[in-house]
Length: 133
Ligand SMILES: [Zn+2]
Image 1 (spheres, protein in one colour):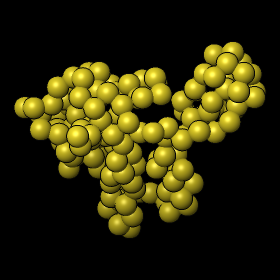
Image 2: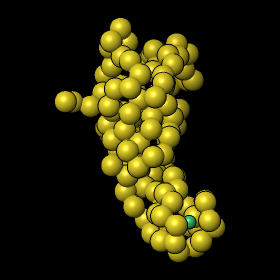
Image 3: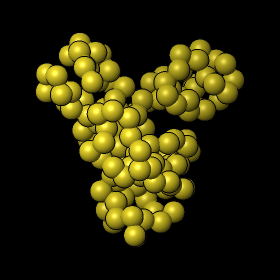
């Protein structure tokens, strides 16, 4: 896989943070960030950073990966309900599959997504891990 440094730089804000928009009219939070409210359509929205904390609602395990992503197998993919009420699908890392269960608290953590074998560029992104007590 070939990655360009400018592309990594451009994606930084999207990959490193959970940026949403909060409607000033009805209070609805739209994720990912949108210039208008996805509930009432108002353009009166402001950028907010989500806490990155939530609850694991469900998860599945994948033993297949596309080219360049084989190192992380097996992949645990979680359905997470963030504390702000938004449900997202995201990778779960550092989890013991034997002990992982629905309902545990999880938190976002910055992790390597892949390494470009061509120029050694490393792309980071947010994944989730079981939150410490
Ligand atoms: Zn609204």
